Image 1 (tube, rainbow, N blue to C red):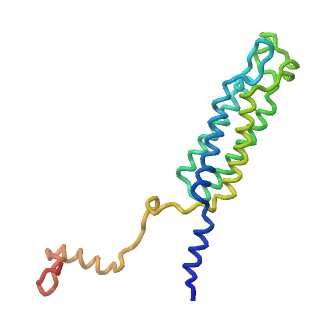
Image 2: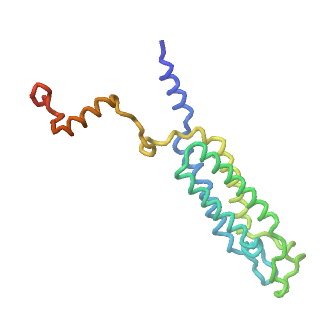
Image 3: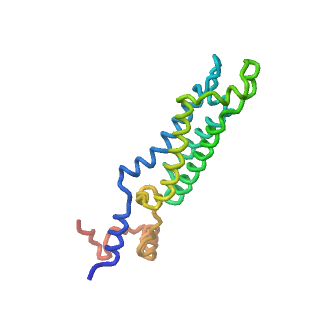
Amino acid sequence: MPDPEVEQAEVEQASVLPAGLRAALTALPLLSAVVAVAVAGRTWRQVGTVAVTGDQLTSDLARGLGLLSLAAWALLLVVGGTGRRVVGVLEALIGAGLVAVVATSDSLPTGLQDRGVTEAALASAPLHSAGWLALAAAILLVLGGATLAVLARRWPPRGSRFTRSRTEPENPRETRDIWAAMDRGEDPTVDPDGEPPAN
């Protein structure tokens, strides 16, 4: 008759995601966040001779969301299954916010009027490659975070070296007797007959 515990262990082992897929799902939010931060200071739109960066168009919000995503990703290094699911949801929400920020980046930021830039000219200016990279990073962040949240339960449990063992002695009375014998000056490693234990 098959052992139910063995069958359960086999089922759990079969449901664990392959290491390569786990690595990809972990790396995707990191790469997306790094790209979002890196392109925030680049030119997103060009109006005549005036280059407008992502930081200017979004009032540093795109960069802030990218940094927030990096901070959330760092939690993946220390959290377990439930925490990983929460981080996935958080990454997806940050990505959705970043999509909205990039999509509405045609509003005229303060200070550009003095340089002859009008809101109509800015709205008609095409989005440069840095802006498209930010949008792609945001979409990947949404997809990666959502996938991470759904598949978080299929990660293997953390190793025992990360958990504190709380095993109790098998026989607490025997442990107390040993300490009591030591308090009386007796050697607990010697048999009552006076012979040392055999090696």
